[in-house]
Length: 300
Image (cartoon, rainbow, N blue to C red; front, side, top):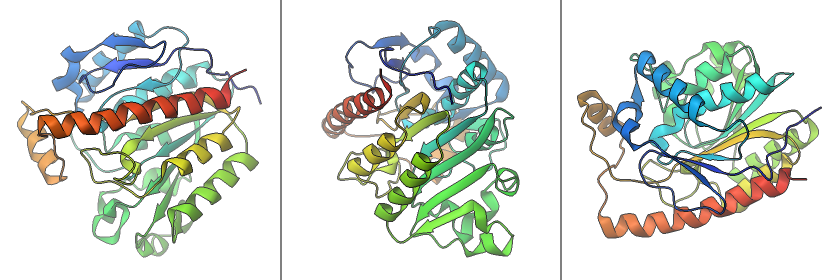
């Protein structure tokens, strides 16, 4: 297995919302003029224009990409495609997230629907979305999940505390790994990643963390920082690309359907300034530790 290593490549900040604090030796790309256009979601035409602009701006080689708010998690899609283009073999994708990001969306792509497009890409061997405690994969929301990547054995959910019995009735049992605790989930995932090494793209949405670890503006999971670090350690020498999202920022959407869907998802984008500053301080510190662990586990 040949894995391009990240270290000493510089971390890149896609500065869309001003939420990501400074990182050592960072490359910061000013992209705030795209914030309303792509935040939460957008049509495929607009997304293609943003992706082209991003590809033209990014250096040929770089380290972990930080995108700001979890509202931008769909930007992982073009970053992964960029990584796929450099590989001589198919890529495994590991997404740490409290949500499946494989939900139906009729108007293009958004932060909760992008996984389907990555999972069905011919250059992707498999996508593992791990750390899900959201009811997005429960019985009441089953119809909202795209079934094609699950049926084609291209996508697996790793969840804790969610009743997914509906999946067995549809013959999808192998696509669902349920656990009694996040600790058990972490151990099983880390063992699998260590025992089955292959080039891997790692994407971390910090809403996977328990609120006492860090605060985001989406409903959060139960993962502890040490559990995430154990997963990264299990991927030592395998990571060929990575990104981090889930930072927190205040924003009022100018687009009506974004305001409607965001409110329906229970998202809080209007945060008191003092509270926001406190949350961001915790976010900045965690970003530094995650980037260091990713680079340290895959450097020379």
